[in-house]
Length: 185
Image (cartoon, rainbow, N blue to C red; front, side, top):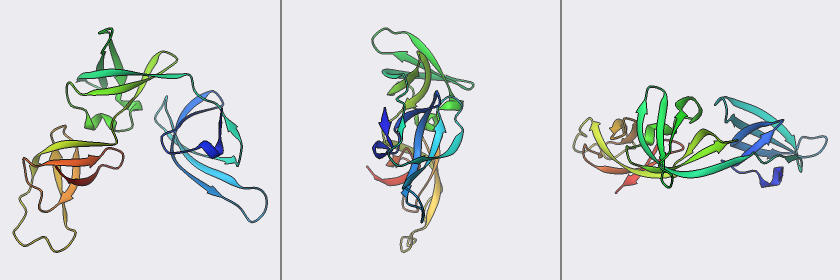
């Protein structure tokens, strides 16, 4: 069991038998009554975002989940195919439940697959990754004064906003939660 004081982004909880991941939360105290915790939760089964408010100190369940280290093999339509590193068993994970994280996967990349009651549901990838820029507009010389950004397509196919001085072939660090540029490597 978790208390609302244990809440943090990314924590997996169970409310009324449904597993959720905390996307955002905020403690607040209304003018009248006790403190509350307003949360934004992602239903792990469907991928839908839902707002739920809890009383401060309220207890919520811990979902029956396990994680396994796996290797990403390939994508087939809306399914991601992974291989268990110890048993060589292959698992399929639907992209509808991964919350956009599949855009950061490269063939052969190792990550953790989240299983709920034995069924693969979600993937855990590192908070930041170093990826190569494969396509972007060239930056004009002298355009480095302000925070001007431009779109850049990375080796995994995902598009992020980068500063104007980033060129094709550069390796950049990207925050996988917000898709923000963190720096050059």
